Image 1 (cartoon, rainbow, N blue to C red):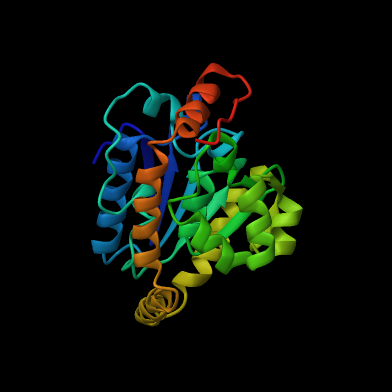
Image 2: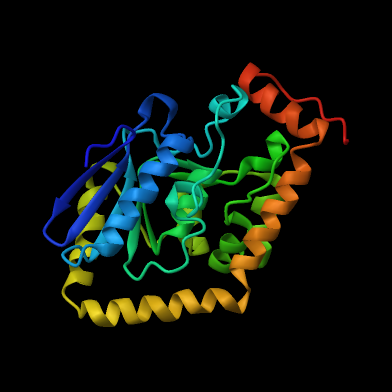
Length: 258
């Protein structure tokens, strides 16, 4: 299948998916979410593909997250059934995905990486959930997944301040598995992916089923549904509108607390 906003490549049993909107730092909009939902559906159903790698086009960004300019244009903002990047609300994928973060992963970009199984970062990678800075919250699993990944205190500080974490801190927090030079990133991800292809694919799928079931320990599905309810209320506030408008207009927002 030919895609407009992503690229795909198969190397043996490994699928490489590249988010391909470098002109907007691989920010995601509904058409791109739809394509990514399709590619993960196909990956799940293809018995010849055992491991996937997800990365972003260009040298600056894995993904800037939600395309706020697209959202501000009042175009279609409906979300596909499997959520952000076709991953945030996908709870039954039995094959691993490695996020190869080749620059900044912000907002929904970090949430997408967190929805993968492993994160390998380039030296210039940085991570943040800055939604609070634009009057929003990390509603695509960032709150739930970050607190599981790095520990509650570190996650809360990131969530409430929106600050950036560089690659070395991401490694120390346990957010990233390893850091490599940018020109070695895909090779490093392929090395891990190839090691996974050497073990039993049935055992990997069984392990993934158990990992997926562990999400029920914090009732992730219900928590994400509650996040969407909260977002619906937040969208009605003046601060939400101000945050989006200030971002688009490249100015500092003036919060009204209402």
